[in-house]
Length: 111
Length: 114
Image (cartoon, rainbow over all chains, first blue to last red; front, side):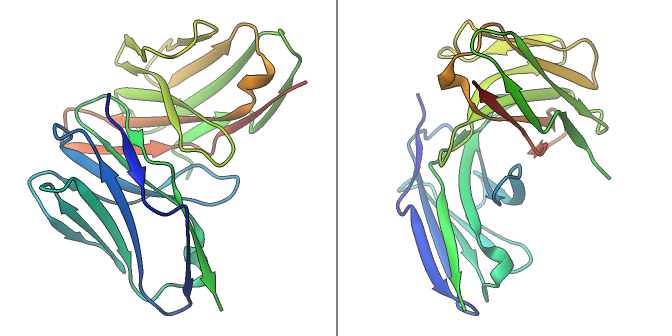
C-alpha cells in the first residue's frame, strides 16, 4: 500500500521567517497531492494542492513543490505568522478514493 | 456558512454501547468519507461512499459501519465501541468527476469511551 511520511515531527521558526515542511511519498501512481493545516480541536483545513503534471504551484504566501523523481513534496510558507502555528499534513491520492496522510509536522512560531 | 456539519461535536459512550455519529453536507458532493484520527496522528480513512456505492478500507474493523441514506447525510455506526475506538472522527466530502479533488472536512466529532 501507499505510504506518505514527513521528515520532521516538529518545526520551530521565528515569526517572519519562511518555513519549509517536507513530505515523502512512496506510490508513484499518485496523481494528486494536498496540504492541510489542522489547528487543535478542529478539522483539517485545505491549504493548497497540486496535480502530478505540475512541479510547482503558488497560493497566497504558500508554495507547494513536487519532485516526482524522488517522490518528494514540500510546503513553503512565506513570512510565517503566529496564526500559522498548527499541524500540517501532506496527503496523496488519486480518483475518488480517500487520501493517504503523512504523520504531520507541528509548526511552532517563535515570537 | 457551514458546509460539512458533524453532530455531535463531542460524544461520550460506554464500552460496548452502540453509538452513531452523523455528518451532513450542503455542497451536494457525490463522495463522502469517514476518517478516524487518534491523538497526534494523521487521519486514517475508514471508508467512503461514491454516490451510493460503499467502499470499505481493507483494515477497517467490522465494528465500524456506515450508512448514506441520501446525498446530504452519512452516518458512522460503531456497534460495540472499545476503549481503543476513542478518537476524533472526521467526515469529508469531495465532488469527484468534476476535476476537483479537494476534500472538504467537517470539524469532527470527538468520541470518548468510558
